[in-house]
Length: 463
Image (cartoon, rainbow, N blue to C red; front, side, top):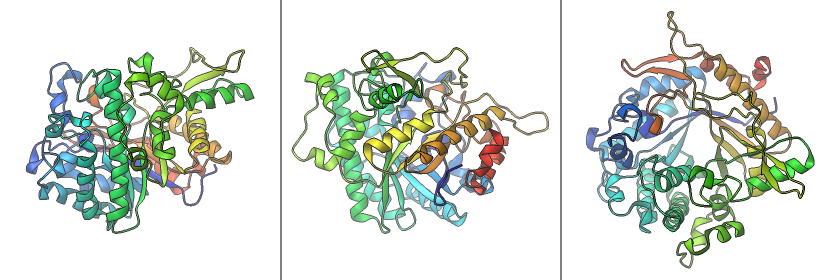
């Protein structure tokens, strides 16, 4: 397997999904605290009030990461835990939690990778317009400075935002995620523009105030097109699809044009401009863009993150244009009913690296399964091992073919609150009994430990 000696093997999680302690020690409410308490919004009325109780059990959890051999841990900071109202007074106890967490991570010999926003927008700021308010970019910058000034003497790797396609698309366009809005095209694009401004301003704050030189990226969805065949025509069609705002087919998900795509978000961040086909699709719904906005949004970053779980098959029609090709009927499905498409981890990072010319980090990849402890207490998850072996083999091929991929973060370190799906979907390397909070390393955790120790060379034994 072709993984560089400096390749980073990590695990990932997000604050609202694991921390619990939703109202403890001065923490403010987030839009997910609001949304999950609305009847019918989350499966069986599940909430993140307790989740995995990571807020109280973080030492145990970091110890398990060390047992797995994780080289890096991607965690997120809860904005309303640090600043309960979103702006203004800092909650010292909340900020202290992340101080202790980072100390524990470092003491375990693990590198902390901090994500500044993973969907838990402060409720009080939502009441002031949320991402629709242009001031949201400044709110985010001010919050970023608080976190950076406390943690950047130990944290060098920073991710600004996680999956704007999701928290704008699912949260603001179709309402299936927090804050549960169903906005029009123009409003979604306006909120999205403010999100991009928030990213750029956070990068500026990081560059200006980090104690140690900051290594900065972000973590959008890697909306991945996979060639339906190895022919040059299909490869070219898949590449074109990934570079098109229509390639992600937002309309099929009930979203306005542009939202479920790579380039509507990535081109402003890297190139300082919205893609031409996206401008056409937006039409009169384009948001107001003030002088200097695009310069702020396109602050230089050090890596391009990509959360990739699956992919769409794309072929070329008679004119060479991209067309969707149905997956074979025998294509495996995860417990989430997502198609298992290992080649997405070959072509996704390959096409993203070709377009943006930045090192790529796989900031999320994993599989939801219905696994449980056997009578002897062990948790066998052979399908996860097979999934990871196939996907990582494909990632290795991307590297062999020239993609500059520098790290992989498994989603997730432990079973957790899976947003509107509640606790139904289990993505973890560690099984969590939500009644007792007992943690159990799954077989995949032991397998992943071997992968890390061998820098990927053990993967071939499972394929």
